[in-house]
Amino acid sequence: MPLPFALRLSPALMAAALLLGTPGARAGLLEDEEARKAILDLRSRFQASEDGARSRAEQLQQAATQLTDQVQQLRRSLLDLNTQLEAQKAENAKLRGGQEQLTRELAELQKRLKDASQALDERLRTVEPQKVALDGKEFVVEAHERRAHDQAMAVLRTGDFDKAVVAINGFMQRFQASGYGDSLRFWLGNAYYGQKNYKDAIAAFRALVNAAPTHVRAPEALLAVANCQIEMKDSRGARKTIDDLVKAYPTSEAAAAGKERVAALKG
Image 1 (spheres, rainbow, N blue to C red):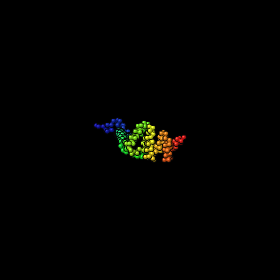
Image 2: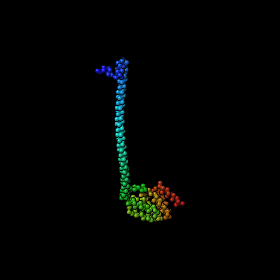
Image 3: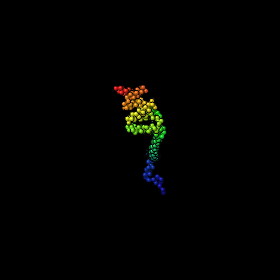
Image 4: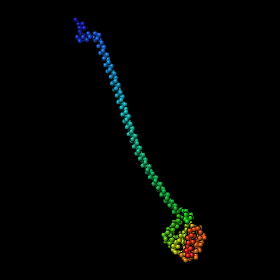
């Protein structure tokens, strides 16, 4: 016949059952249960903390990835900006080069215009009437007239009085009404004086005084007449001429020089 339930348990189980059946055994079992619950709770909190840490790590990893992407994007933007900057520098350099070229071309054009203007002025001066100021007088002459005068005076300055007489007489015959006429009469007299042709020199000097008594060189012309007369041994004529000089131009330097000449003649 089957054994009772108690008899079917193993000795160990029977001993455990007997212990559990006692009050002390039940208290121990309760303490183990609490410890087990505490361990399970600790495990649960540790797992939650570990899960939280893992979540934060994942979030940090995502943030780091995003930051890396942003840094890469910023680097690309900086690279693009640097490329644009270099391109702009090259464009500016090109523009500066073009501007410098334009400046050079403008300066060259201005120089050509200035040269052309000066050349035009020179050509106009050779054909247009010109105002001349000579020995206190102003008058207008033709360009070819002025060239002829300058050429005659250039011959006189060489000291070749023969050629100077020819040049000045030629000018006066060609330009009989020239404003240069009065001054050239004075220089013609000097050219004759240089030739020791005192008679013609006197005629030239007196022609100036008669034609233009207010001319700035008229006093010198009268003194030159007296000098020619002295060279011709005409002391009386020289004194008369100097007297006329002093009366007509008393304050002139020529009059003062004439007075000295008269004193020398008397001596």
